[in-house]
Length: 189
Image (cartoon, rainbow, N blue to C red; front, side, top):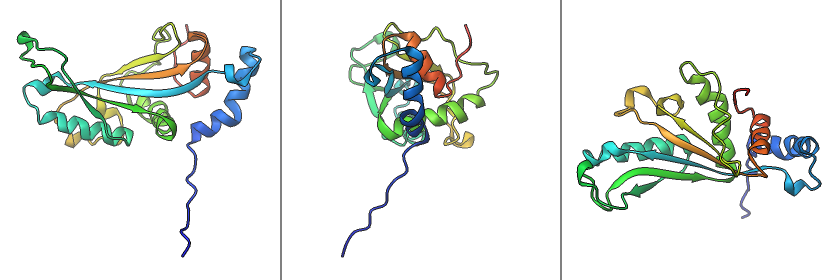
C-alpha cells in the first residue's frame, strides 16, 4: 500500500522572497550575483524571566507561551554564575530561548509584522537605529499578549522578549531594504 504524501504549502513570505523580492533587491542594490542579495538566516527569541528565581514553576508557563507563539519548543537558559544580591544560584533556569529557521521563521515574521506589531498600543513604527554593524536587527517586545496565540485570561505574568533577526548582508542599509520589502514597519529616518 503506497503512502500518500501531502505537499505542504510554502510560507507566503518565503515564496514572495524567492519569486519577487530577491530579483528586485539585486536590481536596486546593483549587485552582480544573486548570492550577494541579503537573506534572512534565522530569528532568535529570548525571554529573560528573572521572576522565575522566586517561583520556578512560572518558567514552565513562559515555555508554554513561547512554544505557542513560535510553534517550536524553547530551551531553558541557565544562570552562568551565582549572584547573592538577586538570590541567584549558578545553574538556575532564568529564561528561555528559541531559534527559528526555515518555514517557521517566515511564518513567525509574517505574524509579527502583520498581526502582533499592529496590536501594540501607540505603535508608530520600529526604530531604524536598531541594526548592528553586520546588518542584524534587534527589537524588544514589552508584552507577550500582542500575539493572538496568547489568551489574556491565561496569562499569569506579563513579560517581554527580545527578537533578533539575523540577516546575511553587506550592512545595515542592505538589511533595511530587505525588511522593507517584507513589509517590516521601520520608521523613516
